[in-house]
Length: 210
Length: 411
Image 1 (cartoon, chains in turn green, blue):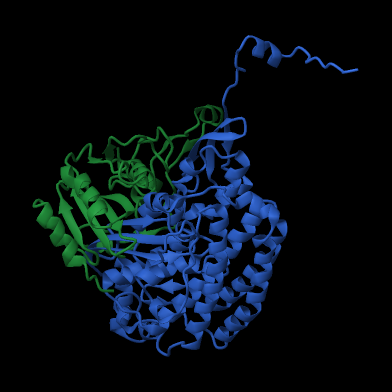
Image 2 (tube, rainbow over the protein chains, first blue to last red; image 1 turned 90 degrees about the horizontal axis):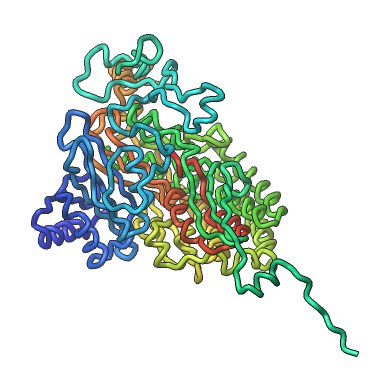
């Protein structure tokens, strides 16, 4: 698929917003922006460049030791020009990342931002209703963060009455039987290259690391 | 002699005399997560004034399985079966969309035969998904018969799926780089035979609803979504087109050679429930036309791209006889297919809307981050707006017309 407008969009953004840099991308035109300018650029893309459709808002966790640790990602689509553009901005605070909301530009951003807050803990400032959406309100973790184990972490049930009555808890999933993976991080060594249940080391046999 | 009637003394009379208003209070109603019209495990927290909805707050997450977390913890090949469970009413289309996203990252071209197979199976998935949506919608608004007919037809499709893939529901048919097996001999003819007998039945099914007074009363001018709102809320698929926005990725950004086929993209005029229903009906006719064209020009070639063999899956026969292929196979299974670093976003026009995969790769066999854009998630986000000031019974009608599936909404 060709991207005839790819160079146009990125160079137009750069001409208007000198702080934008072209982001390497496997397909669609993409730009990096300082997080403070994102909303302005999104609005400009919507109003001046016919990117009227907000496809997706999400974030990427670049690992616990990385800094900046979180990047927020917006995908826009033009229902008239039929092209995409990807806008990426690094969140400033690694411990308590935040990004500006786009809910006033697209109501579609509402749920996407709630999901990103829920799963990755990126706070969208001035969001009118920043509640969790997939996990329950009061859940203590952000599961898509890299330090969160695949098996999950033991937590209280959302319904305290049921929890008190049944003494049941949300428990970590048993990892015996898979999914079997090789390590996704760092150099491969023989131990890592052996397929194994990823979180087996502590879910089945030994205590959880705190 | 004129009869005089006196109004008995009631609370109303007293209130009227005192020029007071009735004391009313709003009621909150929890609809779902287990409710026939929520088609899965969606819960609507409704606030009602009498029968009118004053506030609607959808509660999601009952089917959240952490698919994105799982994707980060397994190799690209291993994730194919998980895509079945996104829109579980059209797994063939999901598999292919996921495979296409990874192929884009790996820069692999799958060749015309694979593309044709994917077009045929995706369109069959579209028909089966719409049949299910239509039948369930009929039940929601009180037309039971539709379901019986549409389910029978869907069953015929599932028999064809079974012959092709070995499974009826969770097919896992597409592989990254191709499909898991070639089309069996004579299968295309069976598909054509299905198309021939299906079209008249489709007309019968639609006849049950299209001019049906009761159905029209339940759907016309109910749940109207303007084109502007549909775009602003990120709706896609028949829900977007029902509002009059001519947006179909198969036409606008043709993938798998969709530009080779002639088909129309139906759009609605008003954006009410009835328009969305009409769009789905017409889309089925168009899908049948695409299937026929794809089979008429069914290309020769391999069902699995040779380029993809060395990255994703070596020839099984060679794995058993050649040392290099054995090692290669071992490395692919243990470490995953070695992919370049990069970011890609691919979305396909699925039955429910555009299903997108945003893959961030740092190289290696496991995606660093995979974001799945489930169309039902975005389609449902308009519920608080569209249910506002509607009757409770119309909420049922609106839900059915959005034709969502919670598997891809909650992921």
